[in-house]
Length: 247
Image (cartoon, rainbow, N blue to C red):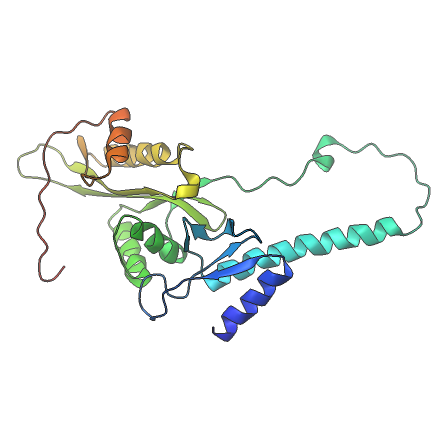
């Protein structure tokens, strides 16, 4: 392990957690330099999609520092409680003071460069192996074209992603939109995240003048086919593809 990985492992161990490191050992390959956190039973805690680490070292460190801050506050509280208590005037705490701090809620937003490594891991779930640097470049190019990639994230953790495209075929009176990719992490499925992303992509493509939206889905993904049918999509054609030398 590199020194940074050793430091992260020590930080995780001090929090009662285990650092999970990507098995990719070749720099430049998708997944290289990514980590996740698991509990003592091996269950994912942060930065793991399925069994694949998706978080970079900075995100892991930030998560662990946040946990450390929580422990520090708890220790201060326990020290204060161990001291003799002075009599004070009774103060009635409001429900807001007693309520635990809520966890961050999933947020739909546009993808940014910092998401590239996690997006590459999500794309790999469908067999699309791509370097995070290429993902970051594509994010910028699509944003410049007015077609930013959409994600749903909880804090720094990306839970789902949706990409779209727009073209004007010569045989149609208006542009045609296309949902090019839709992936929801295994731990976040069946929560309505895919529907949220598709509906937002539809809204943006319609605002861009599209009169038709197409979706392509691999023949083997029968579950995805049923999902799109529930959203009103119908099978209208077969798709053919040919890989070019430059691809």
